[in-house]
Length: 496
Ligand code: FAD
Image (cartoon, rainbow, N blue to C red; front, top):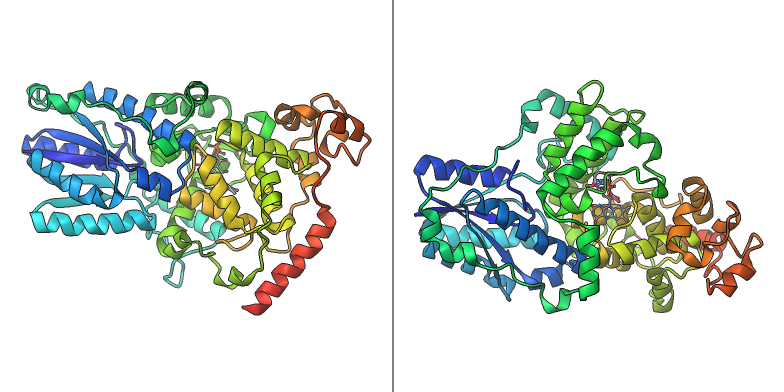
């Protein structure tokens, strides 16, 4: 007999609620704990998972396997070509291992919810108990409701309730211990599982050798790395987060998002550690205090997950605000390509897009700017941008990405009003005042030392330098684009 923990986006041993629950069962019933991860190439395709993210997941699995082996717990990893076979394969494995109990942490995207529903049926018919638990959020979806008893879709009041809830239920931030060690004979009984290899990335998601080597250095894997990064950030930068977080060249944010997306770090761990390091050891809605402000960003992650749970149609290419369905979008592929290639002629936008393709990451302020430029200046269907981001982000996360795009295109939950349109030049001057971020990612402009000229080389006397280095002229005029966007949004809303 045995008990199974099924890993998904929770690739860690410590502070993992589902794994802990499985380990308690294992201890109380004196049965070994077996862990499993099923690689699903079709899910990677359907969810547009970036190759850099697939690579990161597979490297995290290596570390996880090693960490679990130290506890004499096997991690069995297998590729399942057809995703509809995931539930039946899991059932076969339970049968092989005489497991009558499966634990896992819940995933909320619609495909995952459907897969879990199939599993509930499959388990029921075989007399297996299926135990999905909530572990993604710090405050579980459904816990916070509006004063009239309904779901909440505006961030500020939601955030206040979120802080209040955690201050009242502070025990919910307590960590879940790592599982106990399996008995010594488990190695002999399950030797084949201990010896299984982590499969390579599916062909459609594989990277070149050079890219793999680059990303291994750029994105070191595993929960120990995540933990180190967290500790360092809290010690060195959390205090100043509120003042520097919007400056992309300042290295002022945690860059923990790849770990939170892969689950090598629990959001609960992050919030607990930040709260303990905060001057007043409380969760507060205080945007003038670094730790509080940073914890508020983690709350954003919970907020967008809660939106996904209550309004699952956002998983089906529909805007959160249905009245925004009638906006007439552009589908000009040559313009879209200039945006994806970082050749729009707007230096800050190009720097952002190049950071994304080179590293798999983009600073939050730049995500907002690049998204706004696509949706409002170019009026290109925001879903094309949402897709492009997912296909390239190492931290790709449906709820946060969709939430960010919905914010920028004004059709999401608690969005930027449609008539507020970022001016890329003003944003560039404000958030990259010395032009350091632009110089780093747009080498054609690296020689322009003038703090004004770098943001708009053709408009401010550096056209010759830019042209000589092959940097394009701005593809559009922002003021004209703004007028066009206002009219198009108004007309679309008028039709609904
Ligand atoms: P920090 O500033 O250190 O914040 C800590 C953590 O809080 C982050 O790691 C992240 O988990 C969470 N967080 C921060 N800001 C947000 C936010 N606005 N929404 C939700 N969670 C947040 N984040 C993703 O994790 N995956 C995505 O696919 C994603 N796509 C985005 C697309 C757009 C258009 C926009 C505007 C934002 C997107 N974000 C996404 C949110 C945000 O940009 C990143 O979480 C952040 O840049 C990650 O850097 P960091 O870890 O240094 O963040």
